Image 1: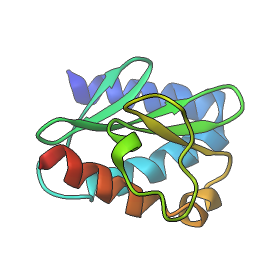
Image 2: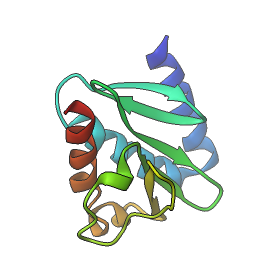
Image 3: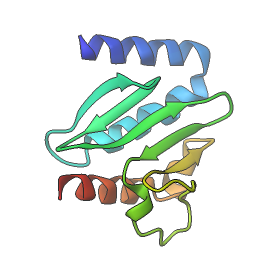
Length: 118
């Protein structure tokens, strides 16, 4: 059931925002490759990823895609790309697929995953 909901979400996104679909698809690949036993589900209007605990989510908005990092406030931000003022979460705004590499997303996903699994 979850796989079909995720596919329906992706199909709808591809039809409505092809540029966001490309960003979300690449983010999804990175997160799923971040280690064994990553699960995904549709929640809060996006895709939520978990290992031992939820560690990130990908959400499409009108003008951008965000990668939300569940424990992002406690992560080191050596590239200065994390945004947000909350006590727990931080996010990275993405406007193009090239932003994924430019903003070191794979590194932050790895840090968030390690933190959730600790």
